[in-house]
Image 1: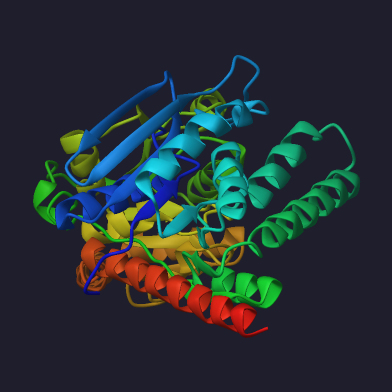
Image 2: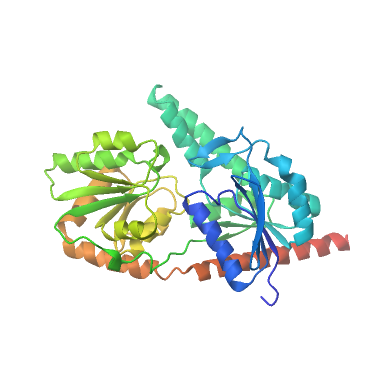
Length: 399
């Protein structure tokens, strides 16, 4: 790309602590590192503007009536009060493309102004909000008979998913973190759809960070301790391990959330570290022997990739994005049922050599995914957006 496009980026998650926010910040760092012109417009705790190299920032405060979607992630129904301020920044910055990231307050402003200013849109999918919502509804309606709660949550999930797909008809190009979502968006929007995976820092996450040397087998989990992560499966796995007389293990659970106290009450052999970051997080991953991630709602599953970079094999669900991260039977296992989780866990607990070999292969596979390669692909998406926009402009001009 001889002249890099000027990008106005509207991430739904930026200051929060989650995989989507981390990816958005990494993309920003990639643009800054390469000197590409980049404007980031995101929500924060106060209004402010600043510049760092080739990257310009506009942070906008959400109103007191904002409501929580997921931990710190919120939705402000009055966020459009910032439209004129954002409009002025866009006119000053003169973007070639507006990059939106989902059906949220920030990207809705970006979409509207893209339409108003006739700036082509690219959309990237980061979070399966439809599945998050379904899991939350199911949790709220536990007092109902199972068939009713599942019916209502399934109906809501389908409607929210359909609404999100409809929203992604506005961009000319859509990016998604796994092939399942690429196919869904491509078919549902009739837009050009491409894969946007995730990279991993193979120096930060490495087997060399291990600090324990004992005979305890650590069964790890990293993530938010919330219903959408299906964390109660960890309780069921431990029950079966106890029933089958297994010893010499403990669960190492990293993260916080409203399921913490319930898990702590029900689990017999578990260490809860709370939220970790930096070197402590790297050590926690490396100290695990088997990574168990039962979430069925993750669009990608950065944590499974970070575990792999740490030399740890994973057992993941057959639903969602994490199943695309591992090579089933080589770097980990894909579980369809509770029995699968239990049987795969026991198999790896009892076979140290297999566990070690799978961990080695997991690191080899994972570290091939560099962030630079991922974001070079995003810029290919920008180029395709401009190409399609140019073709349509020419066709409309001919008419």
